[in-house]
Image (tube, rainbow, N blue to C red; front, side, top):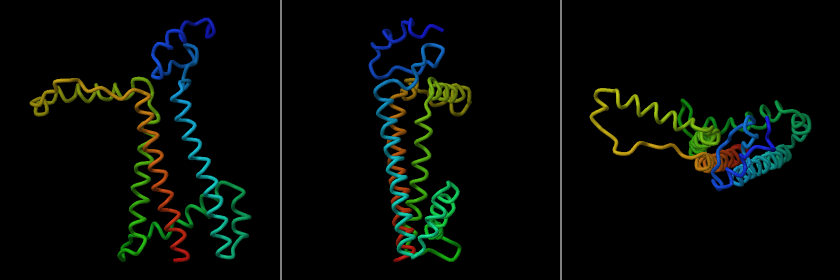
Length: 196
């Protein structure tokens, strides 16, 4: 393995920002483009803002309730965050719709669910290995052409998958929008559910 002596980088410079991941076998060029650095920076920026906001919100909810000891004890381990902050404060949101009808938080409950769907879909695009989507599209096109009824409709052009850079942009947009919708609904519903 001669990563330093490989002609990989001089070849890749002609591809601009769109060069694919070749893995450690060809010099380890995964995630080294400027766009990859941008996507990772935004991804971790949103995660950092999220954890700071989680901390601030949980601390103030316990202050307003006069239950600071819960925050002091539970915020020192991950299960405390999951159980005593996220799950406990999601109960009003989860009950926006229930078997007995709906309440004033039902709009936020739907936004919470929709935000999770958009957020989770983002990972499908962010994890975009080389050829993965194109292989899936070609498999579907092959199956389509061999199905008797579906074969009545022919494509003039062969469908092509998004490039890795395009897929990561779409994934980052989904992740960002889903994150904002999910957490905004959680903040509004958990705060107004306790004090509204």
